[in-house]
Length: 399
Image (cartoon, rainbow, N blue to C red):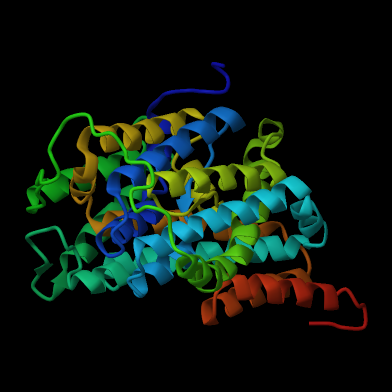
């Protein structure tokens, strides 16, 4: 077990590496869609813990981004989001148990997987930059670059850009430092900055104590909620989940951990996410998945074992159980620009996976997926990449 699970500064720093993806969507879905903070962070924490213990290595946990982004943008009801969690769980369970995912992997060329990783990395970098300059959807909805800080700018310069610039320089300086791990230093520094610049924790939801989660806090969704969720959320999300959270994720896990990742199969990744979404449905949380971007973030900032999962999972679970709905107020101490810096470095790590491609056709497929993703979405890029990669196998075609 000691070889599988380690607890040290690097594991702790790595466990914080993907907060830039997780926290903004989680906070937005609580504030805008009315999800239960206790159920959301408890289910997320438990997924971190259980998946880490089962797979025995660092395992990423992320919100489903297509569902999250669309739900926040259109202010969907909690019932519609809960319906999407249950439906995603059912689809993923079927795809995993029947072995359909193995067939999908067999017909998916390597440059398509690299294209998905490249595109995901580019989206993370772009999202991180938006957090740093104050133009993300969440910041626009809050009408502030740093919604929870008293100070918003120094002259004409947004305070988020100043904090983000300093944090980025510190990250570059400390990225390979084992004594002062970059992820840990900038997150702790970010919390301190939040306190100094006026962020406050207001205990309005009952304060510190033992808060017991509700089972099905919103009741069962209606038929209309399931119908809407299927077409508006689940079907657009499914190709991205299969491309990024299964195929690209398992491939990256093998790159990073080799033989230690033998449990991380495509089937088990599907089943793992299915069970997580059933749990999220029961506790009133958000749709959850694994993801190549999350793994790249954890790994780049130092995570190498399941210890990182246990640390971040216990942190979320304990905060949720002790603070209840006030957990969201504590997490608001972390400036958005700090989350942006984490996203930028996670994304850059993921984009570099295309370096092992060795032909013009392979690079063409990967960059085509990137272009289509930026113009449309990752699901469209993945599907188009699959088609073009098959066509380019014809030797008479050149690029």
